[in-house]
Image (cartoon, rainbow, N blue to C red; front, side, top):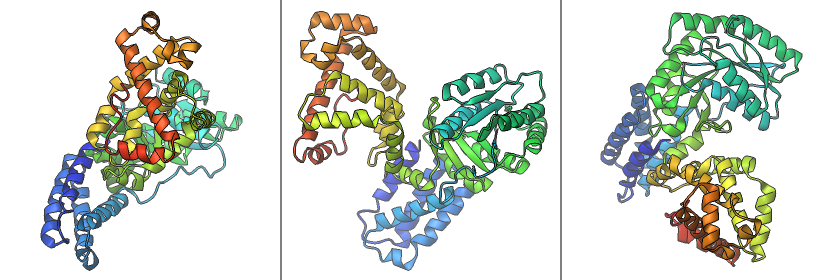
Length: 454
C-alpha cells in the first residue's frame, strides 16, 4: 500500500536535501509536487487543499525557515500533517460495556465484509481474549450465512444460526438474546450489502441498528476505490451513527487515497486496516505508523507486535542457541523460518514495514508468485527424510529426483532450494561470529540477499 505516493513524496523531499535553507520558492515548488502526488493517489480534493495549506503555513514559520536541514524539516512537517489528517491516534474498539458488546458491520457488497467479520472475531479472541459470537443478517446474498458459519469455525468463534427465510431485524434481536444466554463478551453482526447505496438498504440497516442499539457501528469499505470509499463512508455516516471505518484490500491498493481521505470527509476514525484474505490479516490502524510507511520510514513497531503475536518464541530461542553454539543451520530450520514468515503475512508484508525499502522491492516481494514459491520449497523439504533435512550433504542426484517427484516440482527447484539453504547457512555463521550481526546488516544495506526467496 502507498507505493506510488511513497515514491513521489520521497523524490520531492530528496530534492530539498541539496539546498541550504527552506525558502518560499523551494517550499512552493515542493508543495506543487506533493499536491500532484496526493491527487495521483486519489486523495479527495478538499483533503489535498487543506493538507497543502497546513503544510505551507507550518513550513513558512520562522523557525523552519532558519533550519539548516530543509529536507528533514519539511519531512517532519509532512509527517505531522499526515498523522493529523488521518486522526492523530489509534481509536480502539469500545469494549468497556456490559456484555455482550454488539458490533454492527455495514457496507456495500463485495468489499470483504463477511471475511472482515471473521478477521475481527479472530483478533478479539486471540489478542483481547474475548469470547465472541458472530451472526449473519444477510438473507439476500446466496450462501452468505454458510460462508460466515465456515469462517466462524476457522477462527473458533461461536456462530448463531440463521436462515434466509427470517427477517434481518428478527435475526439481529435473536442473536443478541443468544449471545447473552451464551455469556459471550462480544457479538459481531454481519449485515447485507448492496451494489450501491439505496433507500431500501438504508432503511433496513437503520431498523437493525434501532433494534439492537450496538456499541460499535463499523463501516467496511474497499480501499482500492480511493476517494469514492470516503464518499460512500460519508453517505453511510449521514444515515447511521457510525463509530468507525475498516479499510479492506489494502494490499491491492498502491495509492492510499482512501486512508488519507476517510477521516477528513466522514469525521469517523479508521479503526482497522485489512490486507490479504487470511483471517489473521487485520491490523489496528495507527496514523503515526501509516504516515511513517508513506514517507518510506517503515513501521518497525507493527513489525515487532506481529513478531510477538505470530512467531514461535520457543523455536526461535532454540535456533538462536543452536547458532550461538556453532551448530549447522539445517533444512528443518529453514522450513521453520519459511513457516514463521508465512504466519507473519509473507515476505512482502515484512518488507513493506522495513525502513528504506523502495516500492520496487516491496511490490516485487508482494507478487503472489513468491508465496507460491515458498509453499513449493516447504513441499520439497517435506519430501525429504529426517536424515536429508539434518545433513543436506548426503543429497545426491537420485535423492533429488525422488524429492522432485514427491513434491510435484522439478529437479531445478530442488537445486534452487539447496542453494538458498547454503546462502542462509552462510548468513547464520556471520550472525554467530563476533560483531557478525552488525557486519551482516552493513552488507545488506539497501539490498536483499541474492535469489531471495527464490
